Structures are given as structure tokens and as C-alpha cells.
Length: 333
Image (cartoon, rainbow, N blue to C red; front, side):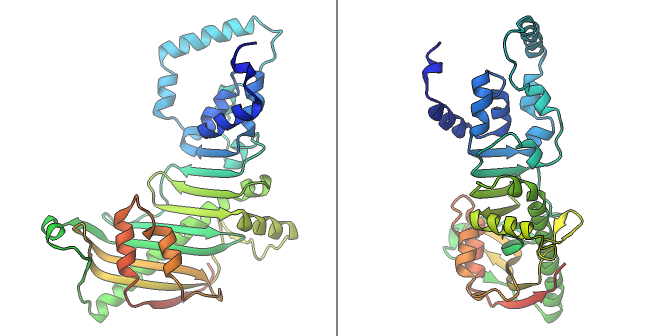
């Protein structure tokens, strides 16, 4: 027995929790029978779908000629030792091409916190435009905060001369109507993207009943879906009751319920940093009839303004919250 074998199982599991990455943990299962058992007990995981389902740079490095030679050599030696129990084969696990996150994580028994990173955003926009959103789900949509703009330009002179956000531009009635159509399209696109991600996680939520938090984001930072313990419990209970009306879907996404949208915008918004956002828009979406739908500040602040790593969006939403609010309602879709 070596020194590592003397480390208690709870300590090893804690180390594996610091690793987090699902692909790495699956590889750890090939090390020994002990690791094969302990790796699946990690409770804080990061699942990067492109790492599991597609080729990556790290995969190319692993599959280099030298690495392939040594892997073949070790497999040959290992095949001469039939008396040893063979743990899960990494290559088999990684090349089964599972189609859902639930299939990939089927062997992990104690997931509590899970972050899923998708390979890209879902909203298709005209060149220069950007949409960033955060949605919370239970059995269906609870809330969604959306920030969007048509274009962003940098004015270096404004950055040095101005210390406050400048809200400029006056639009005509026709410009307002045209802009409104664009803002509604942005909103619908974000809601459809969020509901698609919610639907993708349905089996994960049902299978892992001890999970406390689920975050689904994309590598580009476009959108985030969040489900807390209460939201996942609500989903499971609705599923168990067979309430098909509540959990109904359209194609490969959850149905978005009838919603009430609080929409604010500025034709042109100059930030302290000198960045000028054209057609800057902030939308807060809640299901129709939800109490306290007038209090947008807390929800928006949690989603964006408190994000110290993304100052531009924080600045923008703080300024847009001061704008006049237009309220619209939209039927389920």
C-alpha cells in the first residue's frame, strides 16, 4: 500500500470535487478500482458538452503519435494481467456519443451542484447586435431578464471627458414602432433559447433528486438558465402528477407561458467607459399574474448590475432602469 492509499475516501472525494470537470473525472475512473468508485461520488460538477461530444484541442494532444504509442503499449501490458479487475474504460465512455446530459452523467450518484456549458449561443442576430439574458425556471418560466443592443461603438474622447452615463437621442413615432418590433423579436428569441435549454435538462432534473442548483450557460456568455432546489422539486412533483398541461412542450423546448414584459429602452446610450450602445434595451419578463411584477430593480441587479466581471452590462442596466417603462403582454407560445 502506498501513501496515497492511506488518504481517507472523504478527502479524495473532496479533491475530486475541486477538479469538477466531468471529462477529467471520467478519465480518473480508469486509474484504479478505488478511483472508479470515488469519482462518481463527486457532488460539484462542470459538464462541458463540446468536450464530451466533440473533438477539442486537448483531445488532439492526447491523441498525438507519442501518446498513442504509449497508450497502445500500456494496453498490451494491461491485457497480459487478467487477474486484475478492469475499471471503466475511458475511451469507451467518451466515444459512446451520448445525446443528452442525463446520459453522460448517469454514473454520477451524488450531484448537488451542476454547471453545464454549451458550445455556443442560440440567438441569431444581425451583425453587431448582441443579446444577453438570464432566466430562472421551475416547472416552467419564473423570470427572465434580457439586455440587448443593435451596435456598440467606442468614443475615446467621451470616455475621458464624461464621468456619467449620457442618455441621448430622441426618436419619432415611426422609429419607436420599428424599434419596438425589433425589441419584441429579441425578447422572443431569448425566451425560446431559454426554454430550449430548460427542456434539454428535463431528464437530469428527474434523475438527480438531491441536486440543489443547476446552471446552464454557453461559452459565449449569451444566456444563462438557473434552477434552484425549490424549482427542481416543483418540476419533479409536476412530472409525478402527470400534469401534462403545465409541462407541455413545442418541439424540443418547453412552452413559454403567457407573460408580462416590462420594457425599457434608449435610442442611444453613452456609458462612462466611452462605449455608445445603439437601441439599448432592457426587458424583464414574468408569467402573467405573478405578484410584485412592478419591482424590477432587484431582479435586474441580481442578473447583471451585480456582475463585477461585465461592467458594460452593469452600467447599461443601471441607466436603463431609470428610463420610462412600457408594459406589454404576450400569449403563451
